[in-house]
Image (cartoon, rainbow, N blue to C red; front, side):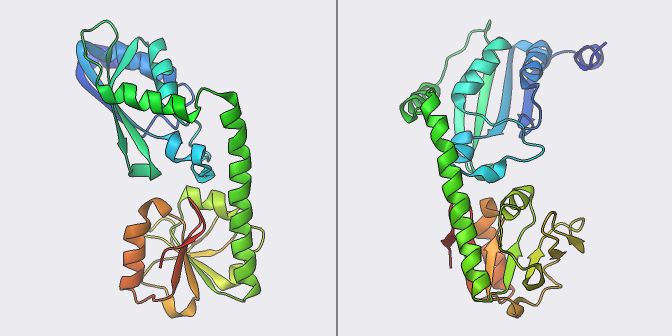
Length: 259
């Protein structure tokens, strides 16, 4: 008896099923969609969020590709995947979470439903952007290579000028980016992060110390770099509240002084 049978036996079918930011972590997502179909009542609703590839890797924001993110999605790909599970997208909403996300509302294909205009509108946008063209995806490689070059040039310049660098946040996306940096002096760098489990540890691959906000001497650093760029407004505000009044940068979506 698999997990679907166990859930049915214990709880029966459901009128509403949510899946929030879980479908990037499993390459058997079509099987998960099929399980949803089995567990959903005939007129039930399935709502889920995924990181939107249009705002992430399709713009060269490669930092969203890491160990637990094995899949990235567009509306085009999701419509095709859900069709294998006999599910239909009836509504879609673009969100700002996770650096750009989609929230989809789905129904069983056998049920009566009305597809909202914004599904067709967004699907048309994706076609116009070239998401169904192999050439589009071939160009993504060059875009990512240019971003990596710009990031390395930024650090090379600052290390050459003997700058002490404070990194804000130690997310997995930040680990991806910093491990592509060739010039970085761990003795003149520090990472601060909110998560107690990460504090008093070493940043993976670069062996830079990770500390808490409260245990940091902010005046010891010449610039700050926000690695958790999807929360940049909140983190810059917090950084300023601790008295840091020097330049603050992001690396993704682009190397930019946000001060």
